[in-house]
Structure formats: structure tokens, C-alpha cells
View (cartoon, rainbow, N blue to C red):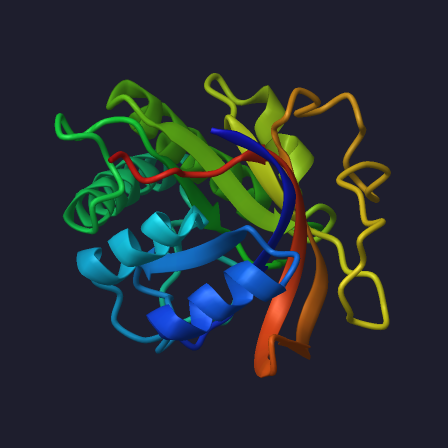
Length: 242
């Protein structure tokens, strides 16, 4: 579902009571879920019941999958530098992400109907072979999610993850979550998803953009301090199906 508003993400897993406090007292209405993937950090163990309780409070969710990274990075888990193999890996990652999303209650009973963003961290975009393989990987990711009744997204830096490349894929992502930070890191009610470096406003223009405008910083709402990243939304997130 498209949403206009603000979201936060945190590696630590806030408790149900902490999330209730922030839903009442903070400007945030959506929260990122790192649902899995081989490159996911140790961000706590999500459960379907925890997510269901957050949804009952009114939270919208941004399911994110952190799998293999670009072939030219130093991440332990990397995609192939061969575009054909990378495409197949993208398909495989989509299937794994759908299985986890379903187990967490993020899909409809028939296993369709969610949005999952792929976390593609920065890499050497001057390396054309690496860039081609990353684009092919995301092509496989997006095509498979769409084929199985879901929407596909990508998170990354507009410049150093080359997000614009994916707009010309045979099946482009349904939405992008753009990392484009404004310093100092703080909540900014005036932040916008537009006028981002390296990504023309003509790409993903129809409620298809989230923008992470602030990196890790402490914010206090309702007497509770959390270390978060902040995002402004005019794009697609997941709403738990009742």
C-alpha cells in the first residue's frame, strides 16, 4: 500500500510496549523489518506474533531482505560477476525472501500480496562488469517477486548503488528506497523524496519512493530514546493482512 509520512529503522528490535509508546508520541508511522538474508546483521529475532502486535497498533512495515552484495565488494556473501548467474541468484533470493515473509505473516493466506525491498549496499559503480551483474541480479529479484504475486523494491544509495540502472530492466522494481542522507542526522518534517542526486525525478514518480534521509542517531519520543535511521515516504510499504 502506498503511504505518505515518516518511517524509522533500527537494528535493535524495540519491544511491543516501546513501539506502542512511539506510535502514540512520535511522528513515525512505519518501521523497517530486516526479515533475513545472508548479509543481515544480528538485529534480533522477528516473530509473526511480534509483527502482528505492531500491526494492531497501527504500524506499517517495510520488509527488507539483506542477501548477497555486489561482486566487487568485500562483503562475505557476494553475488556472481556473471550476469546470467547473478540473475538466477536474484530469483533464488526472491524465493527465499517470500518464504520468510510468509512465515512472518506478511503475505496473504495464498502466499501473495506483500512488498519486499532488497538491500543493495554501496559498491564500485565505476566497475562496469560488477554494475552489469548487480543490475541483472535485481532483474531476477524483481521478475520473480512479480511472478509470484508480490511487489519488488530495492534499497540503496542513489549514486553508489546505481539505482537508476534498474529502471531499464525488463521488470523494473515497483519502488525504490533511496539512501540520500542530510546532515546533521535528525528528524526532518520537511524532508522529501525528490531532488535526489543521481536519480531523476522522472524515475519511480508515482508514489514509488522512500528516502532514508538520516543515518544512525538518537531520538527521544515519549521519554524513550532509540538509535534510528529516519526516512520520508511517498511510496509502497506492507500492511499486515487482517
